[in-house]
Image: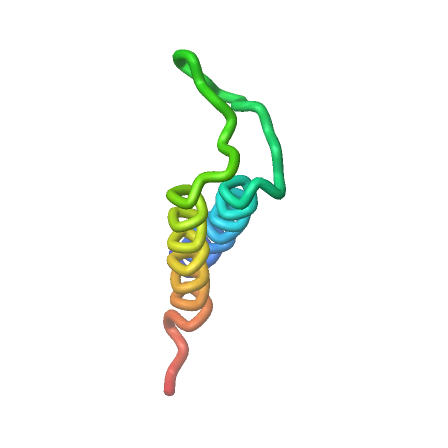
Length: 73
């Protein structure tokens, strides 16, 4: 059960990372969905590209850890 949850978390984080990277690169344009105050769309931002790449890498590592966990050898 924990392995499945770890794998799912990794996949979701990876997909979010791709989305954030593409938004930061200015390829994908979306309006903010859940906004508490005056929010601006994420567009052409190096910071969001870096955050997206880091989230993608962390997600891949989590998914791999979830898939490997509990295997002998």
